[in-house]
Length: 233
Ligand SMILES: Nc1ncnc2c1ncn2[C@@H]1O[C@H](COP(=O)(O)OP(=O)(O)OP(=O)(O)O)[C@@H](O)[C@H]1O
Ligand SMILES: [Mg+2]
Image 1 (tube, rainbow, N blue to C red):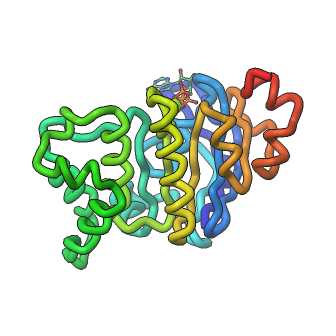
Image 2 (tube, rainbow, N blue to C red; image 1 turned 90 degrees about the horizontal axis):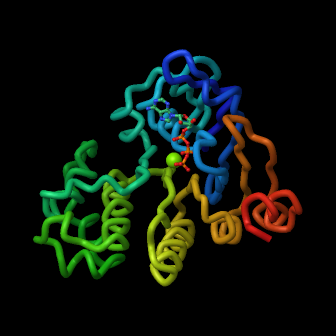
């Protein structure tokens, strides 16, 4: 689905991704774990096309996407749920979801809206409310729903559990697993490595802009170095 090879990216003169290579196969949940400032969000933004790339290549289903504009990447199946949710606070829940469908050519988004309201009943109850009035968990659901409105093949999630109470974290991860059963491919960035690795088929560990380890979710969960550095064990 997604193949990244030797990707480098900088802010001004400072390189923060130093030759990242990573693959996500169709139907997988792959997680990228790493500490603050490791480069996780920068990598997701590079995949979405909103962060410039200095060198390396990115392929979506074998097509080079490096030069595709961000909106084209969305139309071709890559949708990102950004760090911190970034819902449009003054707009209603319904308007936020409709904006997620703006790249759709078919214009037939009614059925998708219904599907998302069925998936997230709390959003249905609040469809006329301003997004800014929702709780953190509801805003995360809305950010996911907004991304799904583009009918993506590959969903990029940047720290969806951040700042949420444990019961909501559980709900978000259950949602991600449900999306996988519906055929979606997921690249999940998390600091909550424990839960992320538990639901992931495979994982990568990123440290200061480099992939330092990869394996199945289980292998990484049981790895001594991962346990002491990321799981506090
Ligand atoms: N807009 C920016 N300008 C300059 N440097 C930046 C910018 N955004 C991020 N950086 C730097 O790039 C590096 C990677 O940041 P990034 O946000 O990708 O990390 P992260 O792994 O997502 O961290 P976090 O877990 O805190 O979200 C860090 O050193 C950060 O300080
Ligand atoms: Mg980040």
